[in-house]
Amino acid sequence: MKVKENAKVKLLKTASRLFQLQGYHGTGLNQITKESGAPKGSLYYHFPNGKEQLALESVKFTAESVAEQIAVGLQQSTEPVKAIQDFINDLADRFTKESAKDGIPIAAIALETSLTSETLRKACQTAYGSYQAIFTKKLMDAGFDEPKAKQLGVFINATIEGAFLLSFTTGNSQPLQIAAQQIPILLKRS
Image 1 (cartoon, rainbow, N blue to C red):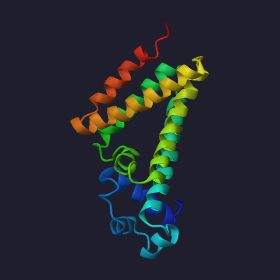
Image 2 (image 1 turned 90 degrees about the vertical axis):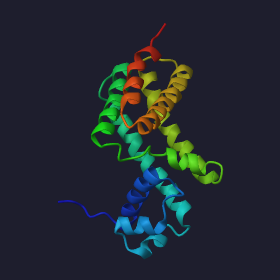
Image 3 (image 1 turned 90 degrees about the horizontal axis):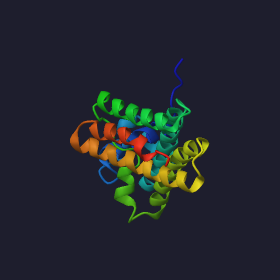
Image 4 (image 1 turned 120 degrees about the vertical axis):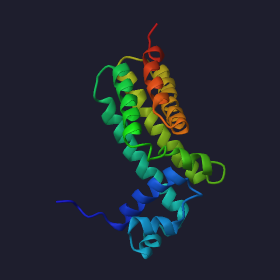
């Protein structure tokens, strides 16, 4: 039996999706309420500080989901090169199958609000940090020293974010596929 989602979860899922697709400034509270199907009063009940609070919790909600996807994806192989390549190739496949219907999970909010909202900037920073930490841990578990693993964790996350942006720009998954192809070179040990 499917568990019925409460209004707060509906609002978070809808806001997260719309912020990804339309950006922070392009998404209105009325649209979020309408598309979520949640009662109108529930928006300010759950998010009394308005749009910024909803965006903050949406970033956290999305970050947890993405971090879990990364962690599960990297568990598919003990070898970091294969695990990271397979993870990026899976992202490329999903991009193609879903016809690029979703945006980059945190990027729109990060780009639009980092200079105007310290709260949202820090939430995005924490989100990206959590992704990088997962890549770092995978590399350290495979024997990379911590400083090198941390640098590579940042680089891998930045590469994936950039490849996603280029995939949206070109309308195809080729940039993600190219990023996956370059992982063995990046992680080659001298």
